[in-house]
Each structure stands twice: as C-alpha cells, then as structure tokens.
Length: 97
Length: 300
Image 1: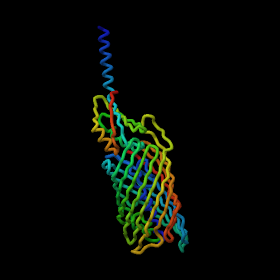
Image 2 (image 1 turned 45 degrees about the horizontal axis):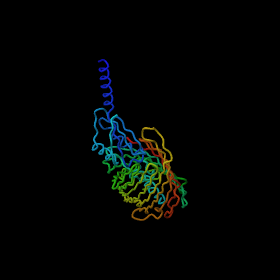
Image 3 (image 1 turned 180 degrees about the vertical axis):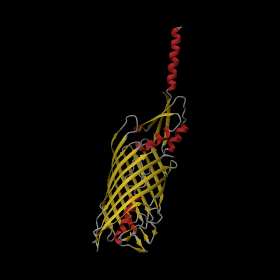
Image 4 (image 1 turned 45 degrees about the vertical axis):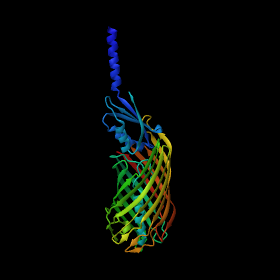
C-alpha cells in the first residue's frame, strides 16, 4: 500500500512538473534574413501574454516560442504577430515541454 | 559668391541619403526591409564631407559636418513613417580681396518627413525580396536668414532652404542570410525661397553586401559582420538665383563606397567612405574629396 501511495504521489508530481513546463511553439517564418530584422518578431512575441521566451534558428528559419503553463497560443494569433512584424508564417507545430 | 552655391547641393545630398537605413541595409541610401507594426528604430549618423577641388581661383575649401537623427515607426507592416532631424555645421573658406575668409554656420537644418509603402514582398526561408516606393517632404525648419560679419550668408550656406521640397523614389532589396542586393532611384524637387532655388536632384544607387562573419550567442540571434560596396550616381540640376541659372552649379557625380557593418539584434554599427570616382560638374562648381559616414541604429 505504501508503494502504491508513493507511486501515485511521484506520478502526480511528475505530471504536474510536465504540465508546469508549458508548451513550445515552433514557427517556420519566411523572410528572416538578419538579426536586426528578426528582433522585430521577438519584440512582438515577448510582449504577448504568457510567452516566456523566444529563440531563433535563422539558418532554418525557425522561431521557437516557449509559453507558460496553461497558456495557449493559436495559429491565427501567431500568424498576426508575424504578419505585423513584416514576415510570413509558413507553418507551425507545438510540443509540450 | 556664386561659387558657394554648390554647398547647398552637397548638404542636400548628405541629408537626403540619410533617410531610410534600417536593417542590414545600404549605408548610403535606402532599404525596403520591414519595420514591425507599432515598433520603432532610431538612427544617429555622423557625416563628414570635404570638398577642396576648386577649378576657380578662389581656393575654396568646404567642410560640412552633419548629424542627422532619424526616427522610424512601423505604422503597419507595410507602411513605415520616417522623421529626419539634421544638425549641421558648414564652413567655407575662400580667398577674397581682403584675404583668406571663413564663413560658417551651425544649427538645426530642414526636417524631413517621409513615408514608405511595401508594395511587393516575397519571403522564403532565410531570404526576402521587397519593393517599396516612398515619398517625403523637406520642411523649412532651418534658419534661412543667418548672417556673419560679411552680411547675410548666401542661400546655400544657410541651414535651411526656406522652401518645401518634395521627393519621391522607389527601392528594391533582395536579402539572404549571406548577402544582400539593393537598388534605389529617387528624385527631389527643390523649390525657390528668398530668390534662391537649389537644382533638383536625381539619384541611382546600387549596393552589394556580403556576410563575412557570424557569431554571438548560440541560442539567440547571431551577430553578423558585413562588408559591402555601394555606388551612387547623383545628378544635380543648376541652381537658380533670382530666376537666373547659376552656371557654376550642378552636374553629375559618381561615388563608390566601401562599407563595413556590424549587426546584432538591437544595434547596427556601420561605416562608409564615399569616394567620388567621376565628377562632371558645371562651370566652377566645387569638386568633392570624400564623404565619411559613421552610423548607429537602435531597435527600441
């Protein structure tokens, strides 16, 4: 019985830890060709409620957005942010952290 | 004093070329690269011009120091607004019957407001191609009745033209992670004030920049170092004084400018030296030696 309780507690803690880590959105953005331009997107995203961090892989045209626990960013929302920054959102995917 | 009229043309060249330099853009002319909606970019540039090639007998020497401060605002993702506030220091030395004479002035020049529209853009992974027409107007904010011990300074040595001078142009930019091409053409209509009218100005500008180094943080935006070569073809019409053409003004100049740019996510530090490789000037118009530019851009 003790083992079962311990396993349950550990499982709950592990799940909570996973949930608390939030979500990473991987944006494939076309038109990003220099760091000074790309900062325009970073400024837009970092001001968005629930966004924890933004990182880039310019060679692959990727913008990686980490959102806090319980925050959901929609494709329409992200597309508008990228459009407003003057670039083109080609595709996106999301993965739990 | 007719010979000093070319001063005004040179100052106009300095400031009109100071307008749109934003991202990894040309140093000596404009770019079509984007500014985010609701975001701003600020740019401070220091320019130093020397012109000592006097074909006449007055041994003229012109020095112009200009500090154009440029504020840029993304009204939408396609419409961008620009404001250019120039601080100027002009000095002309020349031989007169009374001896070597220096005439100088400094202060606020004519402020320019401009708007640019991105008419076409094609984005791909790590590259972009954009075409953007633009229009602007130079406003008579600079003093145009400055005086020194010899009396009122001639029109071209004044800080401002006293006139409202519109300009139109179009710029095309093709940029990838490793290189960038730019081409721009523009025309500035100069109007008369106080009996003096600078000649209109037409420009054709080309640029090529190549990234030679990339570094910086591994997980953030990298830093780029570009070297480049820019070319500027500038045609200036003859000035008009009290309705008469000044035969010692205007002409065509071709510049080549090696450039260096260091770019991070929030700043660009860059420099260029414009060398006049060909000057076909009218009459005794003063020939230039060089224009040196040092510039800092800030993403805020």
